Length: 318
Image 1 (spheres, rainbow, N blue to C red):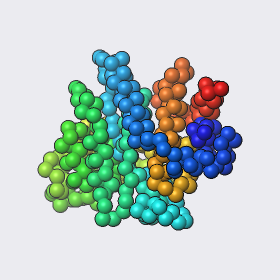
Image 2: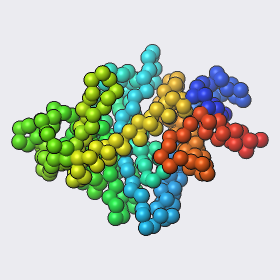
Image 3: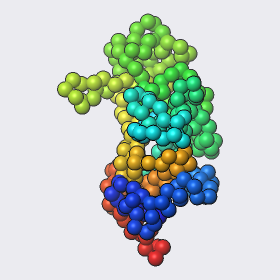
Image 4: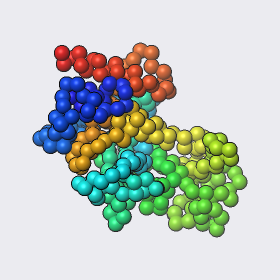
């Protein structure tokens, strides 16, 4: 089965590498077989919800905060995909399929929650798709003493998005361009004190702004982050780094679980590839959480995890 390929630990779930089924059979399973993909997604989401609620019930006196992370990831493709014409576009110089993803983090739990496909100019923007994804989160997850926080990068710093997030009763921590104008005429890069409370142009409330220096290139790069919370400069900069958790997920699901290797020519095939890659991530993540030697904040070796889960999966069917 296709799940065996995802869990073999190689990161290359290509149908021609299958040993149990033929590539044609796997293609039919992904593109034509009559199984209910939406029901499959609902079952995974329901299980994720149960895990979150169990996490809170097991820690009633120190309930972990729920962090909601949204971002856009691109699956670069070349060549012709006639049935994917309205899914294949160029965004940030990358041609392919572009997904807006909502990812939930709570304690040690890392849960892909929902996804939308950006269909190009003239259709709902990534910002509007992200707000639509937020509406899929049950109200029970957004209630409680500790308000959930939404994390996003600078591509989601628009007034529409910030106001939409705050209107849902969430706090926000979002990247911001250095050239964004403030109400007093200055730009964000003109700020001299980290943690200043200032009012960006177009917003009707003050925001706390801080920054970090990244030393990845020869010249250090300054990145700004802002929040509706007055967290102070140092702490806000630290909280802002939490957004990178979704980048780690993208790297894992695309590299280790083969999402960027999809070669399906139908929308159903692409969406099913996403669903099964997400299932492989879930299975390995849950295995990691149950490990007695789990490192508290460590990102595991997904190759070893996938091989272990794959072996258990194969033996359970024998």
